[in-house]
Length: 271
Ligand SMILES: [Zn+2]
Ligand SMILES: [Zn+2]
Image 1 (cartoon, rainbow, N blue to C red):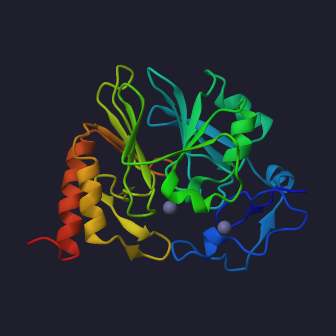
Image 2 (cartoon, protein in one colour):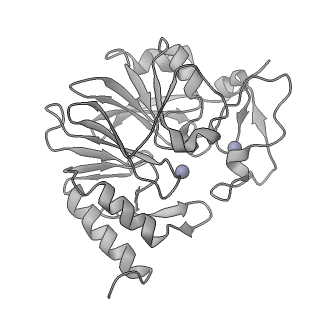
C-alpha cells in the first residue's frame, strides 16, 4: 500500500495498492490536470528527485522543495510567544527535512490555509511526533488522506494563543483561512493569508482570485466579506504563498489600498 502523490498539485492520498483514478483537487475548476495527463509519484520517487529547501524568507524559517514542485508554496515556521507553528505544508516529509525544520525547536502544531496546501500533512504530523493539524471544517471534503491528528475547527475564528488567531477568510475556498500573529514576539503584527489574498508581483498590493491558474476573479461579495474578516487586524507585514512574495512594512495600508483598487476594477465600487 502506497500513499501516492499527485504530481501537479502535490496532494498525498490515502495509501492504496494502485494509484488513484483521478485527483479531485486537480479536476476542480480552481486547479487543472497536468498537461501530460494525471501523473502520480510514490513518496520514495519524490524523495529521490527532490530535496528540502530550508532558508530564511523575510526573517522567518521557510520550508519548501528543491527543485520547485507542484504549486511551489513555501511553508513557514512561526515562533510565536505561544506555540511554535508550522504554517502551511509541503509534499516532502523526509527525515532530512524534519531535522532541518526542527533544528531551532520542536513544532507544536500545523495549521494550513486551504486544500491546495494540505499536501503531505498527515506524514508531516507523524514525522513531527503526532502534532495536531488544524483545518477549517468547511473544507473537510477536500482531505484526501485522513489522519487522527486533524482537528477541524468551525466558525469565523480560532484563537491559538493570545495574539495568534486563525481567521476564516473564504473566497478562494469556503474554509480558506488566514493566520494573524500579533504578540510580543511579533509586535508589529503579520498576516499569513494563504491564497485568499495574494501578494502580487509589485509586492505593494494584494489581489483576490477564486482560481489563480485559471484566472477566475473572486466575487466582490466574497472580497467584501474578506475585508470585514480582517478589519480589526493590525499588521505591518503580509507573507504570501511562496518565496519572496511578501509585503514587508505598511501591509495594513497595502491591504486597504488593494481592496479599494480591486472593487473599483470589477465595477463594485464607484470610480
Ligand atoms: Zn492533484
Ligand atoms: Zn489555492
